[in-house]
Every structure is written in C-alpha cells, then in structure tokens.
Image 1: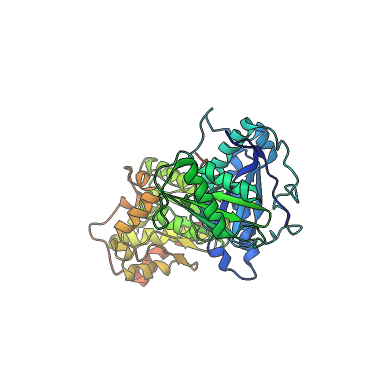
Image 2 (image 1 turned 45 degrees about the vertical axis):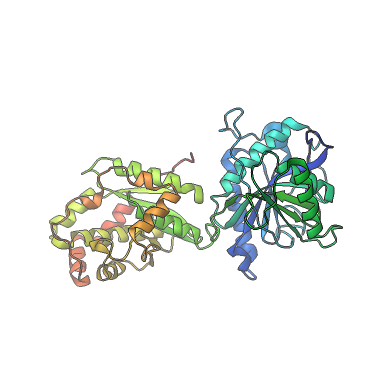
Length: 470
C-alpha cells in the first residue's frame, strides 16, 4: 500500500525526523455495513469536504478500513491555507484522542491505494516537504481547525488529532516523547500493529516508549487510570501517534437516509428532534410557522438562530417561513372551538407535506413527546397522523422534558430556544383544549376551508432563508 507523503519538521533538541500532523477519523456504525458500505463512505467523504469548504483549507483524504486520514494539502503547507476567519496568532484548541484502527483497505474511489482526492502516491514527497517550521505551524493551525469541524460531522465515532511519522521505531518513539512534553500526572502507552512485519512487537514498542518518556520527563506510569494515554498505531506504510481526545457524533452520514421536512418551532423540542434525525442520516429542511401578521418577527429570528446552530451537523441548511396568522384566524372563524390547536397542527402538517413534494422529501419530523402537552395525547397524535400521507417521525416520543433539555444543552440550542418570543401556537388558543379529538370533526372543519388548497397556498408563499455558518 503506498505511503502518504510526509513533511519534515524539526524537533527542538533532537535530530530532524520526518513527520506530519493529521486528523484520524474513526468510523463507528458504518463498519457494520455490508456490500453497500462504500456508498456510506463516499457520502461521508462528501460531507467531510462540505464541512470545511468555507475555511479555504485544501484537504487531502485517505480512506482506510474503519478509519479516514485527513491532512492539509501541499498548497496550505506553503502558507496559502490559513483559514480566513482565524485571527493572526490564534490557534484553535487541539483535539486529541484515539482508539485502534482496523487494517488498511483501498479507498474505493479510483485506483486502489490512491488517496481519495488525488494526492501523491507511493511515498512521493509533498510539495514544500522541507519548507521548515513556519509552514509547519501554519499547517498545524489548519489541522486543528479541521479537527474541530470533524467533531460535528455525522457518521464519525472518534476524532483523533495525530502525528504521522515514518514507519520506523525511532521515529515513533521520538514523536511519542514530543507529544508528552508539558503534561501533568501519570501516563500509559497503548500500541497496535496492523502490519505484523514491523520489526518491533507491540509490547516492545510500548516498553521502549514508556522508558523514554520516563527518562525524559519522570512521569509515573499508571496502566489502569492514566492521566494521559499515548496511542501508537503501526500501519502498512507509516506510524500514527496521538493522545486522548474527543468523541464524534456517531450515527450515519447525513443524506444516506433521504430528506425530511422539520416542523421547526422556536421551542426546545423540535431542534433536538432535527438533530436526532440528522444523526440517523436524514438531511433536514426546516419549516417554521410564524404568527405574522398578528405577531412580530421574533419567532423567525429564533428559528433562524436555531437552524444556524444546527447547520454545523449537515451544512447547506434551508429554512422556510410561513406567515400563519391569517390562516389561524380563518380556522377560528370556521368554528374550530376546542379543536383550534388540533386544526392548526393538522394544517401545518398538510403545509409540510406540500413543501415535501417541492423538495423531494419523504417524511415529516416533529418534536412531539407523548403526553407532554394536550395536543400530544395518543388520541390526538393518531388524529394528526390522519392529516397527511407521509410518515411523521417523532424521535422524542418517549423522552421527558428533562432529557430533551439536557440534549438541547449539549447541542447548544437550549439558550436560543429559551429566548422570549410570541409563538403562533399561543394565538387564538381556546380556554379548553380537546385532548381526545375525533378525526371526523377535524375533517369537517377542514372541508369548510378547503384545507388542502390552503396548505398549497401557504407552501407556495413560504419565504426561504439560508443561514450562514458562524
């Protein structure tokens, strides 16, 4: 298998050893796929490139069996790939971590053994390989930012900020010693050889590295609960060295499961529902219903902020806003009474179905949780399913509010959701809300309004907003 090109960087106080900083992406559920696994991997490659496209960093990608290797392309190593948004002198926090990767395989794109984006083959040196420390520092800053972006890409189980060195015991030992500089507390070393022809066994490599680290820094060894773990992976053509780090999102690559329309309120639940469906490979388009012209635009601002925050998980998100106030008035004047909320929800679903036809989506997604509010009783959920032919996905159906809020906090949408606004669902609310709505009664209300035609009109009038990545 051809080696990746290595760049030379000097180690202070030691002989120069060829090395290059990179990002290792450990795959999770994807490795369980069968004959169609390459489809998942190719889509993940596309999503990886999309996630860093706005940074202006040329990216090289290699697919292995269970792991993806990312490096900065040679143009960036010469100084042309510093992210536009990075202030001078600022280096993002490094991400360290790792677990052992599986054996290397061809990437499934083009000639076997070639990098996925056409990087040099068979050990060819990268342009500017001996360019010196300043370019190495620039490449390190770019790799750190790539690692940060990868932590939000669906389909990746682990993000490992690594150093890639020549397939030589001395190079691996030197890189491991350098990684431990400035650490505190105890350490352990874990080694794995995917290439059993390597002249040093895993146990010997662990012992050599551990001895050198102790000689250099005097750190104590703790094999059960170390403060820092050094991982060394011997591959077919090089060695990867890295320390602890950051979990990925897991799940499946966005887009693998199709497209869905998320009914996005400004509340806590629907952003979490969208996140969960993206994690299962669904690309989400967002549909928000505002109370305009009966309310101000505050709920639209919240929906925009939520979609902007969620966009880091899929990139290229689209938000459509429907002015729903006058439709609500029509429902109220038609005598909906206690069924007002249910009639509104059904009309929203019909509008979502009309949007789905326009955007080739095959499901609707809501943040319903069984029994949380009056419209989410089992009887009322059944009545809402009757409104449309598309499946309605409810990933939060069995969660309580505390669990939903905890996940919203983790994905950074809770703060936006808690901002004050006037939700359209709070308009024209009857004193008593029906908890056991009859489908026949709801259909009679909709017949008075020609609800299907009204839904088409609302979908046609929806305004699109494209949140920009922050």
